[in-house]
Image (cartoon, rainbow, N blue to C red; front, side, top):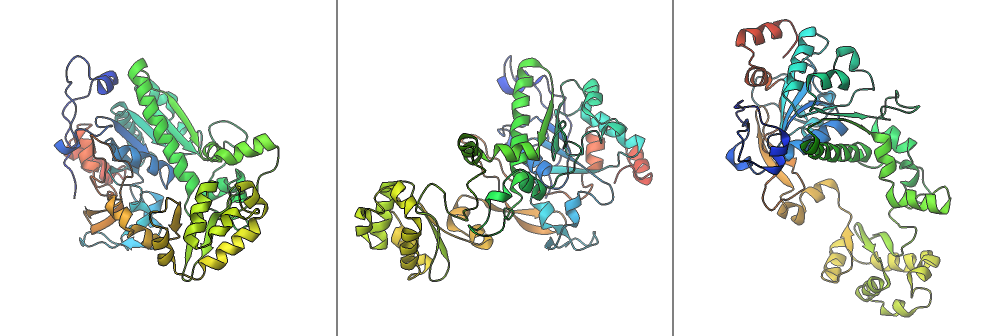
Amino acid sequence: MSVAFKLIARRPALPHLFLRRRGTPQWRSYSTPAEDTLPLKGVRVLDMTRVLAGPYCTQILGDLGADIIKVEHPVRGDDTRAWGPPYAQYQDGKHEGPGESAYYLGVNRNKRSIGLSFAHKSGVEILHRLAKECDVLVENYLPGALKKYNMDYETLRAINPKLIYASITGYGQTGPYSNRAGYDVMVEAEMGLMHITGARDGDPVKVGVAVTDLTTGLYTSNAVMAALLARARTGKGQHIDACLSDCQVATLANIASSALISGKKDSGRWGTAHPSIVPYRSYKTLDGDILFGGGNDRLFGVLCDRLGFPEWKTDPRFVTNRDRVQHREIIDGLIEETVQKKTTQEWLEILEGSGMPYAAVNDIQGTLNHSHVQARGMVTEVDHPSCGPIKLVNTPIKYSHATPGVRTPPPTLGQHTDEILGGILDYEKDDIARLKKEGVIA
């Protein structure tokens, strides 16, 4: 399933995009009428990112209506196309290989793909022309790596002074580590997250998902949207320096604040427990695990009643949270002994309507099939042009006057090359054919 894209007119200055003054301007149209209310409709993004943090950032922008032009190596494409299994198998008979990787499919919806090599002079020329037609460029190369291709911010600012140029790196554009490559797991280790993650007496472990990549993508998408608002006031673009290390330190949040205020190293690893709240952890049931969050004394009382031990509420060892923290092992042991006597589902039914925060510990399939997840529309199906119907996680944000979501499936490599070159840059078919023959595009 794809959407036809057509260049109608270059949009006016962005103040009109956000303020809608002096009448309604004529916009270029690459969306259907149902997408007219999307917040970022009319914004075009040149996406020169690979793997996770960058593609996650641009996917968020795409979900909100931006036209994302994903630049990929003309032969191998985004690195994650080869990261499998699992794969969604090809069904159209036109492609070789195992299929489209699940990793790639997870962060590349609502984008158009152009296969292009900027090792060729003609490829750089195409990128320069695209940069002139775009509002935003997002890249995740090492600092200075794009300068030798004349794709650095200073070069592109001269071509398009209104361009917002976002750079995502491991350690930023400055500082002693700026030239180091940084994958998520390295930054989790270097910047403290791994040290506070894991069982109480166990080894440090990484988070189950590449959370530093994801938070960096989130921060960068917010920064891009803020820069668009700033441009609406000033008429000027700017360079955004975003990195995994800074974002990881920022998301240490209250844990970092505690270390700064106390002067202590940190609170250590607590598994699912909380260093300052009891009960606040997962407990073994007869067939699984369930988590309770007794964030105050009233909620602890509710839990005591539902567990069948109201006398715990008046036990001097457990009356206040401070008491319970001091006697953590005792109260945790009592709760564990009780909870193990029933199944997870039985406890869920007992706690239903209590006002007590609680949750079953679900696996991923259990999560995706969860009745609430389904009711919120968080899993959707889209028709992929080569793989047929595939299921994807949907965008999590709901608007009262817009419907962000999966409008187009993740593209195949170079799926929109002809469309982009012809529709945006007015390349003739013969020129496109020549560039393909020369290996510049695919």
